[in-house]
Image (cartoon, rainbow, N blue to C red; front, top):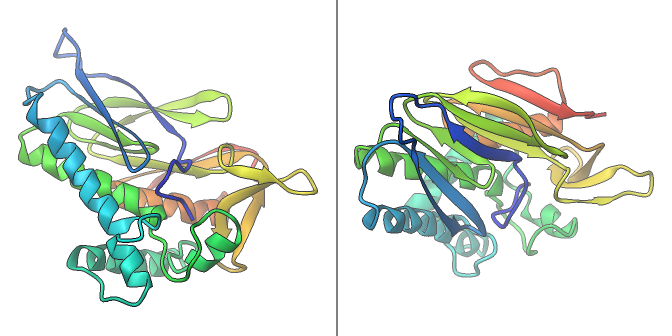
Length: 262
């Protein structure tokens, strides 16, 4: 499944389409969870305090969810310790998503991920395919609490927009392939054109695993993007639909495939 270190999810933030502010929106950026985060907003905010608050939220959830930190809540849980309250929230969500996707999203594959060469080893749970999206949703809760309602926030490939119309690019193998407008929506992508190795028959061996076999998926370069109400669900469904293949669009979601999936 997707890793908490830079793992694909192929979305690039472009520019805002908010026309009421001629001076344009303000961009903040930083690093967390092994990748870059960006905030774009045309509303006033505390430029000294807010970046630290965003970083603190992301650091908290990385400490809860990382499979790479030996002392994270998840690593402790995988060694047999009780789940913390915050970890329990995400475990419950992941289990519901596993059921909703018919098992195409499966968070119980840490051992298979390590065997495939994409994980740290050990057995238990890997929440990478939902964790970054969940963290993005928590940052957007913070922004709303700070009175910042018109915004778009991205963490690597997970993106969530508040009020307003925000143009966000979907990245393909050769750059931005399509642009969509987000308003009170989230977007996440899953694919194999960044994190892969080549099989003997020339197909790309993805870091995304097929829960039915426990083996990496073999596909030509392609990606699937899911647009939905929140980043956690969009992220998990992007993983599930990459497993299932094209032709499926769950209710309440928009699905965009790029590349040749078979």
